[in-house]
Length: 279
Image (tube, rainbow, N blue to C red; front, top):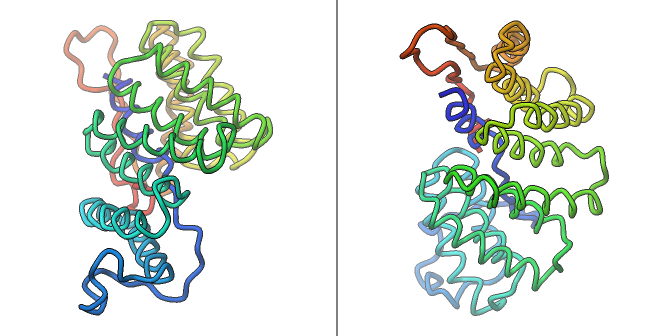
């Protein structure tokens, strides 16, 4: 199904994770730590910060299995020094949730996102922009599970926070509208889905330009909704725009469409996306 393939693509490129905010000159792995410092209470906060940077870099490289192990160690290192409500621990919980979400472990992901929300609300307040990011991540996970009504509420809650903290033109708002569009499309509400995807597209074009990969995803969301309305000419037009962007940015979009064919292959597939886009 088009929706499923688009959903996988969107999850691949847009699920936000947090990078460590500390600026440090070196990166280390557990293997590089002195043997006498391997205990969870023996590391300094500076060394822990370095390890956090390494975990983020490993995640960004696509090695999620190793990143997950590093994040789990980081929780053990940070807890005795900073306490359960430390902001950095909330970051780790969110990132673990993103890894699990991308691996299809949605229930485990939801558990970590809940921990991240509790942490951010306690450390930064309920209206913080990072709370909105995690709410959006939970919405995507609920969407993947088919809980469309719950997901829409989460996206709307995220929008409310982002409007106050980021302003009405920030591209992160597009992520929320995109999620709402996917939910409405799955519910068969194509007209409302088109409105949501159009909001997403307008925000992203204004903020990112016309040739960004996220703009391609918005075009494909619109194409999906128009296809389900059987407006094939409009769907073709949007498909062509998306394909051109994805090809230019290092990927390839392939569309298969034959409304008269009973067992047609998935109408949308994107592959060969560069590793740097696999966050």
